[in-house]
Image (cartoon, rainbow, N blue to C red; front, side):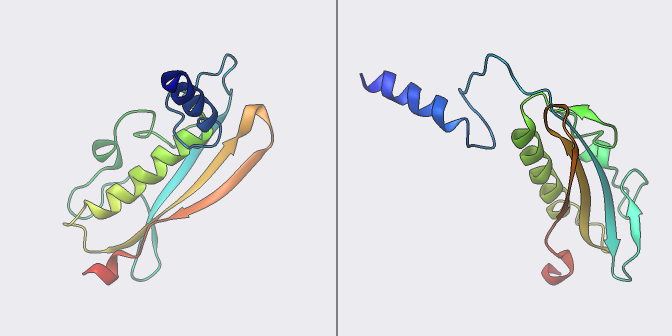
Length: 135
């Protein structure tokens, strides 16, 4: 009985969690997403992360998997929109925290566009913490 209750809990929880572990859906989402990512320096200048930046970093070398290495093109959110965007936000924070040779970037900013199940686009701006305060 405890096992059945635990399984039911995980299935129900999957509808509200970003990462729907054990949450089976017979008809999954057909949602898509895309992001534009920039580094913002101390002068407020914005630099596309597809271009190499101080320290020799490149986005596609730092972030891999789940389409996160190429978020610039519209892609299917294969694990659901909330989960995919959650992974992307975590990747953005990880890059901001793990590029110590880059002393110019104050924060990373992403304009994330999502299309839930083929609907109208929704745009969200995601910004990492200011790295200059940590130096």
